Amino acid sequence: MSQAPEAGRGATVTPMRVVIALCLIAPFVAMLWVGSYAKTDPAFIGIPFFYWYQMAWVLISTVLTMIAYKLWQRDQRARSAAKGGVSE
Image (cartoon, rainbow, N blue to C red; front, side, top):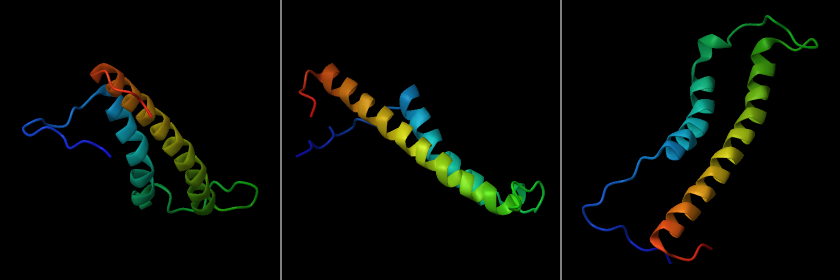
């Protein structure tokens, strides 16, 4: 089981956690900013820009999520080692 955080202790913001957040937020921003891709040109192998841009973000989102997960694992191992705990 996980331990409850200590009372009065806030969340720790580290550069790695900022990178993780950016990896997870980027796809949302890209997809919610519809004006940037609501067009038909340039077409790619006959597919309008609107469609291939969204399909490209499916792949990009997958890669960014994998990167965020690996960074999160590394961060958790480092925090566990710093506390003198055993990593799982």
